[in-house]
Image 1 (cartoon, one colour):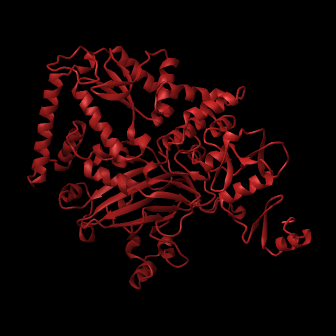
Image 2 (cartoon, helix red, strand yellow):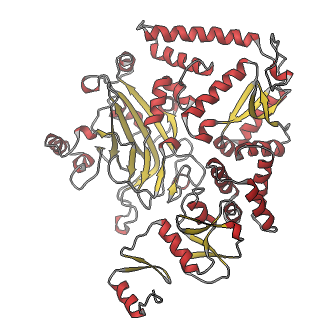
Image 3 (cartoon, one colour):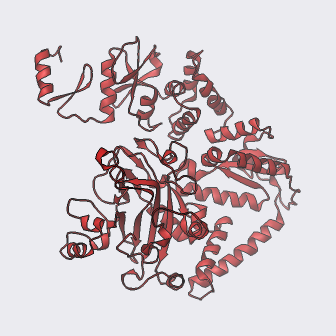
Amino acid sequence: MLDAGLSPRTIRRRVETGRLHLLYRGAYAFGRAGVSERGQWLGGVLVGGEGALLSHRSAASLWGLMAHVPLVEITVPSWRRVSGIALHEGGVHPDERTERDGIPVTTVARTPLDIAEVVSEREFGWAFEEADRLGLLDVPELESVCARGFGRRGLRLVRPQLDAVRLSTRSPLEARVLELCRAHSLLLPETNVKVLGKEVDAYWPEQRLMVEADGFEFHGHRAAFERDRARDAEMQVAGYRVLRLTHRRLDEEPEKVVAQLRHLLSDVPAPRSTKGHPGPGTSEREGERGQGTVEWVGLVALVALTLAGLVAVGVRVPGSALASAIASRILCAAALADHCGDEPRLIAAYGDEVGRLVRKHMPTIFFEEGSRAVPVDFRRCRETGCGDAAEHGFVRRTRAGLPVTAFVHVVDCRPDAVEDSEAAGVDCSGVRAGNLYLQYWLYYADSATLRGVPIAGDAGYHRDDWESVQVRIRADGSADERASSHNGYNDRPGPIRGWASDAGVAPIKDAEEAIGLRSENGWGAETHMLIVSGGSHAGHVDGIPDLERLTPGSSVHLVPLEPVAGATGARFAVTPPWRKHVWRDPEAADTQ
């Protein structure tokens, strides 16, 4: 600004009048104080001077490899002190410099080497996996960066990932399986070999055992899940054993995975007889097929088709809902069904159709700025320490490594299911008839409505907090949505709209609905969003969300709540879902 002709006095006056806002010493925002994270990154690079560029965790965030971190990190040719910015001194090779969105930044190949020196091994693995998943990794470039970075500490984490790539493994999860086998002296598998003409990730020929990365977690869509299960069924029919693994299992229960692998590797199955010859590109031992297994699957599939057919034509079969679910599950395992839902536990609990709907309608959760807590599985965490997560960016796990979780309760009042639902004590009368209700229950370790207000003390605080977002699917396929908010349910916030429901003042709430100030019973058009307040976790489903912190619906770990409710002996400071009115009356207006 001095070069542009502005005097120090003019700059000072514009700061005082609010036209300029200081970001860092020597960098100002024009017009408004709040700037986007990209504005903060660019401002930091400009302050760094000639040759500066965004690097480390900030560069990883810009490339989409890590969640946003508040601290801006840049690399500069020579060190200087700049308040509010983390500077790293050092030269950057011209091949490792680029621009993204107008911001000078380290390349994707250079960024892993930088972040390997400032983050944990687990965080580095996730960032490397994300680069691989996004198709941003260039192996020759990564090898060049490592060669130029001889002696750097970050090579300790980068080289194993690079070696894994050289071993032709396609994802860090596969590399972790190899590392797990080496660390526990397990027989090492062959990688990327063909079995029945299809390439598999890891294979032990003598044990007829293969390990595959779970497609739903790695690729994140239902088509990958269905392809995997169809492929598994084909392998199992031919007498092979398939173990699918996810990052979650390797993170949370590595000992169990090792025990399963050790058991499977010690159990060598007897050779299967074969009446055919191996297919093209398949070894002789890979072409063996089990006729007994084929006949067994054929018989089971016939029973499943019979059950499904009887239910489809309207023949009453005792426990028809259970029969339908079993039929769907068997057909899925035998790869005879066209659609196998999104997650096996949802299919097992609710059948293929409802299981898919549960996955599809889980909304994206937007968290209020400054919030820390995320919903978790109460069986694993009931303290704020294990339930808090990063305050910015895409949040999929807590800082303790637990997944963002929602429990699911289904109330089916459609004609084919209403008899079973009413037998279970559900109210399907009146406006409920013909609807399918999906309830997503979110557990937080505590609720602090007045958190951060010094004079409030413990007012508004209680341990345990159950909130929900609910979806009502009508007979014509249209869907409505509402969220729990203190003593009632709302679709959108506002100084007038929703306050009576929040306070539990039924007469005023009814009057609001009568004159159109509020949607009936809090139901509004489905938005596929849940916007959660920071302290109380009260929610609404309409409005302009805070995009700084969110969990995509597809990333929320879903757990059927019905079997959990029947088995748990846990006690809560507030009423749990299975004791609330809405558990059996999906149109209930209160949260009691």
